[in-house]
Length: 231
Length: 94
Image (cartoon, rainbow over all chains, first blue to last red; front, side):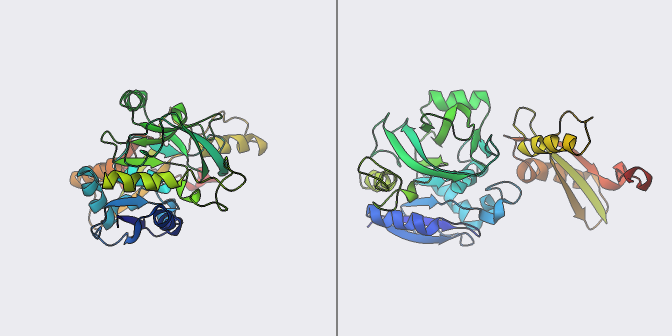
């Protein structure tokens, strides 16, 4: 069975939800510890959401130096699929695996809402079970969710197809060009602010086409990587 | 024992919500003369010995690599705290 590692830092909140999402998708979740410089031969890694190290210094800034992150950076360079969700996305930018950074939402408030996203790139390791242009509903919950990068970086991301998700409709946090998630050039490293692991099981997800709380669009992030690894 | 002070500010083009919130509060408290506020971070790095040029250079590297994120912040000062002596005199502080 495909093994997907889920990293726990001090202050991580959604590691168990992420592990559950991996299991529901048909993979075997493997708990990875921040202080352990060992990926235990996993086939992919998820950096889950939360407030690692209390967001001290900057969100994700301290986690970047955790022993496990040295292994993640090296493995990502070899092509290991890595997904950063919310705080995990912030860790990926601080670790220079993805460009840009996140600052406070432009309205200054914490926001928790179901968010409609457009899948811009359905060719990455984490999005191949989607169709390009498809609209999906994923919960968003953060205060530092405004994606920023300089214009040259934004143009390059757009030009190279590295914008993976964009907010459909209203921009919920002032992110540059309504970017919700991006990938590295190779497409194995993906980061996004919304939380796919909270939309994986009917009855516990956002509203979906089948009815209230029945949205499971997040599950396809995890089936995507399982299919990418088998394929 | 020496101390190096490192000041980090949000880049001018990056929204500074904390500064904006402070700017909004000041007039309500009677401080109408301040038209804008930017809020940054100050670090004080202590060393066992004196602040040498090597120590300052190391502090500058730490400021670029760890204390700031160049995407959103600028390092605006790296200095020997004793040399700059920027503590506010007591008579001014009152």
